Image (cartoon, rainbow, N blue to C red):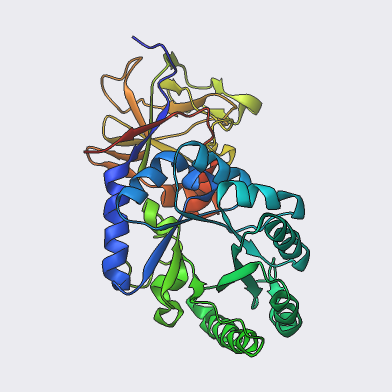
Length: 376
């Protein structure tokens, strides 16, 4: 009996905890892990993942925007939570109200926060983000001295950390550039020290850097994809922690029919049956995050065997050719990501077929796909 559509993502919180411990063993116990749970924990469910990570001893979480942090606070998740994407000046009140820590790279945001703190007799912690070569957001490393001097005048602000972000730590052919970013960051640390700002935390490494560049492990690393068992497609050729996939995605056959050779399937009639075929339709489509680019080239698993996607992936449905699989009927399980007997499809496999990365795949499955959490 179905009261809801059978398409769902199962999130294995025990696998999440395993990955955390495995990463800790790999990186060394002197390295603190900040768990990145932005973008709904890379599509895995930020609230439940954060609760488990906290229970496993993670002291610091990171999100992208204030709204994500407020969602965690509303769910009762406390502790230091870093806003990686910074804040707008008008969001300073939310920072104080919820006890959050913003990354700062605009002096206007720091000044607004400082003014509010002064009015309330408080001090706020911030992390200063330095652009050492990412070219996205952050204080340009060449402007670090002026920024540090301005920041030193804000007496109700405590700089807890200096941080940066690597542009190409996942590409070992560009190791020289990553090393140059670390050199620039080291110079900025000295510049801030000359302005009287000596933060206790230096924060450089994301998941790829923490694995491939031991020099980047400065005491605190920001781990995102690794925690969710992702990254084999991002750093395929270096030693890395033993990881387990946290997300699996399954559905069921919703409709089945016989078609004759010469019949077309789907929008645009891009697939013409070359033989009499048994066709199964599965209730998942691009509105759920299953990429349309997988039309006529994706695969799913039915009864332990991979079967091809045929025709165009539509908004709500995807069509499979199950002619060679015995005993398929309405209600037969379909695995989109995960393992079923001898069959296995990973997020990295889908990423390879869609010319992207596994992070985008798991982030792309929207809230129309319910998350079912399991542990213990």
